[in-house]
Image 1: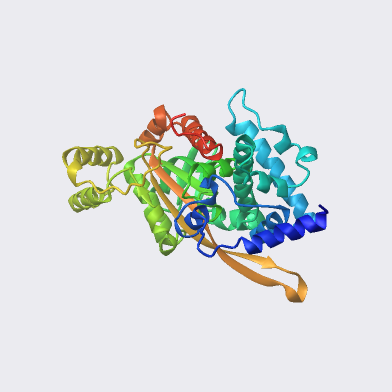
Image 2: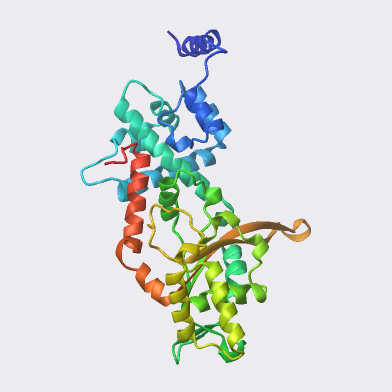
Length: 383
């Protein structure tokens, strides 16, 4: 049978085989059932033409050489990430799926991910496509296009009110405040997440997509005391460095100290004295109040299976209205958009405690990697 007749026969079968009462459960689960496409066990692509249509709807024109190269580059990055971060010793991706000479065309990856003939190849093809999917979203977000402008406009207002004296080894927030400002043990700009790190995070969290990856950019304040941790918030708001209407409410966490007890203690101490309160006395009073009134404590918690319940801090996500310039000359115009950033605050005692045990960063990352591995490779969680 000629290629033309084969294609015609396939097309006719598709038309004759149309069944208006048949619905694909996996498709409906993804569209209206709240299931991520990453968690779908297979695709439903029957031939190369349908694969090309799928890719076109996804956002790429397979007839465009530049688009094809972008997809091949994403394929290479996905293969590298799986090999370097998700596979255990002795595991290997089938060569047919990572060698472009053998795969020949990326439409074949979609067809293999839909196949019933070879379950092993089908499973691995889906694994590669899952990672490619997350990479595509990471490579096409606002941060990838305007990284420098976003970092400068979010971080500069914060850095401008931090005084770091390397001679005496001190760091202060708001040096113009009485007493020279709020003494800090640390002010850290969170290391910029690599794309690979962000991809692993998204793969480990089914509820996350690139659009909701809110902590690409952030800072951490480590204060001397719990009181100073709340003073940091007060300073940032009072001096209009932080616009609290832009806080994302459901992202706020406070497991450091309950707000209701903190307000009560500070009001009581303030009414007793007009003078500056001794920091150690305040810290001890806060501890005693928490011990005696723990049942009234109003924390703000959000479950994070990777951090564990003992990780204590204040964390919130705000948004900054960022302005960038597009075009040149007469066509130049301003483009404005909100971009999220994270602020973490904790006192030094809590910071030291968070660095050890099951909350430690390396342990956190390892738990995240194992979860991403289970999801990408379709493994049981009990592995």
